[in-house]
Length: 494
Image (tube, rainbow, N blue to C red; front, side):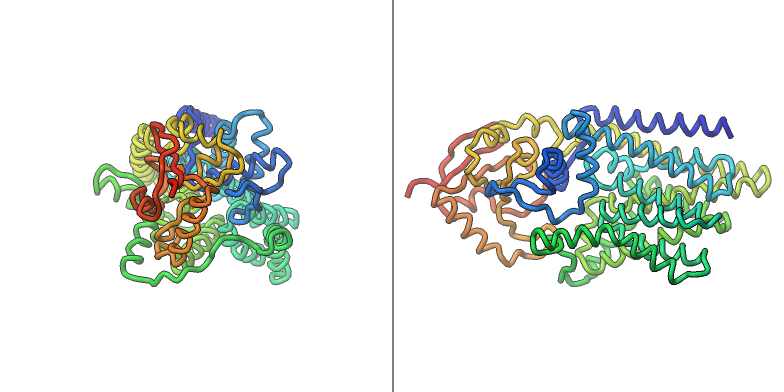
């Protein structure tokens, strides 16, 4: 056991070192990362959970829950810059998440040897897990709180204690403050608590109220401060079509198949995982992770029904929590199966596990090689050293800026900017009914000399915005400045 513990520690250390090397230029970030960074900075400055607005006055941030920006603001206390602080936070969370996954796999396998090491190796090679820990996203903290809740609930299942249920409720409540998707854990945790106690309904109600209290208080705070609970739109009117069903299927498979070099390589990991899961009988220890997995899968299925599935196909990061839970169950079953059967069965199980791990490690190595050039997003040098961003930083503070890339301006120039009107909405893929009116407002602001246009030649986001030619058809424009990465435009004299 000591030998396995040492091997697990070395594997976790190797994973963290790999992540640290991979993010040597700082943590990657894309859209959403700018909001996290801006709110963390303002929290650090004592300005509350706000962001700079295009008009200069700070605006309350209502789209995202406050958990991750608050954690990032604590990381900024180190004195490091935002990208370096996020890098350190993610490295610490990767170590914590792998350690928790190892502890859970060992417990779920009835302490069979090999489970802890297997899940660390598999999770270290999971591309979606690597991506979220290399990027400024809320998922790593969300995964940590999820696994922590599972640890308390798994321990409570063996020896029920009131403090364990309370600690699990707190972890679940904090996970909802990090990502709204954490609401899936509330009924799952309540069900697990109720099954282990005589006062089932009473205990389940207490768990649900305790877990829901943090986000409920936060939403009430938003209502009192800004007049609404959140700026997030929950339900869309996109019709369900066969194309949407195909998007949903591809999304649900992305986290499992990842990025194989050939069709057989894409099919190998889920096939081997299914073979190992089917070969081993389930155990009572697996009740908590399987209930959590079903709850999260149901939540994501509901989201696919009420929102645009194409939005979820943009990244497999949404499924990283589910992936890590299932990897821990997979490792536990493999270890339990190898202990209960003969030497031949044991050799077969660990051969399959080794082939699966080798396949995952190969895919992860290919992804790591591409990361510095293809996956840094707005953390790339061309954005950090952008001449157009430098122009915006020196521009008068009362100038209203419209742009096709607001995120780098918010982070590197620390000023709010308004995105150009979108022809189609990124969240739903539907036509923007207010596009014409927003375009008229932009034209009026430019004519009255209240605004300028900062147009980058490239953007990391896929917004459907008017081109420069379309804007010039709207009203005559003149170039105020030309930089290697874009141009600053204003309305020409009539």
